[in-house]
Length: 513
Image (cartoon, rainbow, N blue to C red):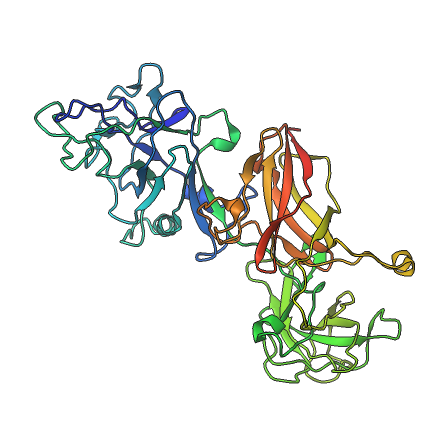
């Protein structure tokens, strides 16, 4: 019940079953994480608001030389009273190091304090379960509902109700029917479990927080989709071939002042107007009058000249807007410019109109249908800013450029144009350790159906790449990785209704200093 290098959830070295003489399991593990650590990341940034983030309890299987169990279920339940961390289990003699003194064990919650119920006192709900078919699996359970209750309890310690719980951690144990049969008054005088098992489930162990293995310590992972989808590089003209939501294009701009993101002062509730213009003769700047926009997104009426953009929630100095525009049937404009401003629906020359930002040239795409089913497209991906080494406290951004594999420009195009870039809207990353191919961060597709996820319990698209006019990218906190090891990045694209892992590997090393 205490803390050591190994959390032993159950073992053949448990209580004796009176009815059969078999050695059965009556062992549990307690795990606790402070709420402040759960809801704040390593950069001291508060995580997204309730409902936008999932919390996953992870315990990692510890290999050992004893018989591995299979075909059993572990239950995770919230503890309802305080307890004291002890010294853990003596892994040589398999005895409790608390010796009924300091720390918790089967009977006592702390020195001089007993459990309200033998084996630990737990709330009736919520409860979580995971079945281990092979026996060697890691524990990976979505406990979002419980963490939300913990957060409410921590914020309202004097008003703990059914939906607000104080955080005393969780207990991990076999289900009642799989825990050992026990009968009072015989071999066991204090514990009774008349519906328990009379067979052994052998030995299952997880790594504890004292483990020397950096990546296998118990944790609660906060997972959410932080991808920014900026359609500046894949802006589509509105089309009757697409549903209304697919005709919208979301655009962003970032207000950096002396190298830091800052909110624009004196905006009315963070709102501003956004307009589209055609390009000048050389397509180097906006020209002419505002273009008429389609209703939808941040455009309130058809043929309006402005959309209403605004500040992104919980972000400083970042603004976004969603809009749609129909291209001319015969000759649609090849270049558009977006202007963020404060003016009214009048002309762009209004004296009160303050222009905050003019975006880069947008090359809009006309959506088209095909007479024949086109082949699945393959891609070539390169990284544009990969460094060989990163510091363990660095928050790094990885950028990628993707193009069609069979792209073959003529000599004039190759000499005078940038390489054509393809935007992959559903791209995901995986981080692995090079020395043993151990997956540190898996593909978070949100579906759990991809072969690469191996049926893992995932919460949202937590490893989705962002994209903008410069390509795809994601940010990675290097303190999540163990220093002095090399790591690799693999990419997974979802195209034409199927996942396809890309062949490229992008490798780097994390240094201690």
